[in-house]
Image (cartoon, rainbow, N blue to C red; front, side, top):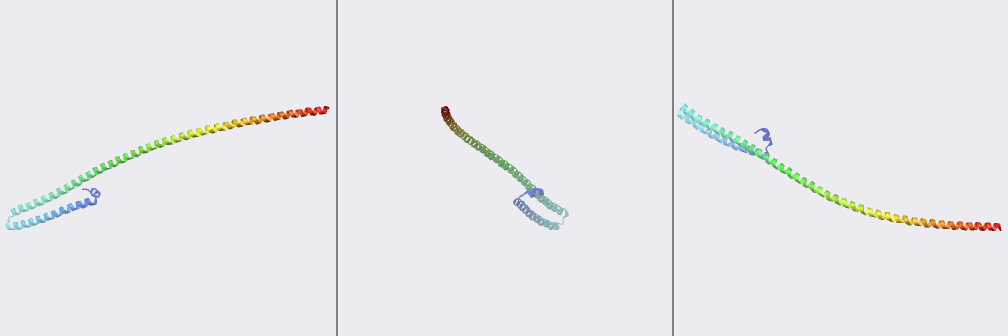
Length: 192
C-alpha cells in the first residue's frame, strides 16, 4: 500500500490495520520464539548426536519452517492489501452511485420546482390579464359615460348659448326699433 493510499484511509481503518499487523507480529514473535526453542532443542540434540550431517538436516528443517513462516506472513500482508484495495474500490463505486443518485434527485426536485413556478406564473399572468381586461373595460365604460355626459352638457350649454344669443338679438332688435321710433319721433318733433 502506498503512502498516498495510507493517507486517504480513516483513522479507524489505520487502527484496524495496525491491530492486524500487531496480532501478526505477536504471532510471528511467538513462532520465532517457538522456532528458537526448537533450534535450541535441535542444537542440544546435535551436540548429543555429534553428527554434522544430522545437524545439517535438522537446521535445514528450521530454515524450512522459518521460510514457511515468512511466506505465510508475506501472503497475509498481500491478502490484507488486496482486501483493503477491494474495499477501497467498493467504497469509491458506492460513493459514485450515491453521488449520482443525489444529483439525479436534485435535478428532479429542481425540475419540479421550475414546473410548479412556471404553472404558478402562468396562472398569475392569466389572473393579472383578466384583472387588466376587467379594469380596461370598466375604464372604457366610465370614459364612454363621461364623454356622453360631457357631450350632453356641451349640447345643453350650446342650446343655452343659442337661447341667450336669441334673447340678446331679440332685445337688441327691439331696442333698435325703439330707438328708431324715438328717432322718428324726434324728427317729427323737430319738424313741428
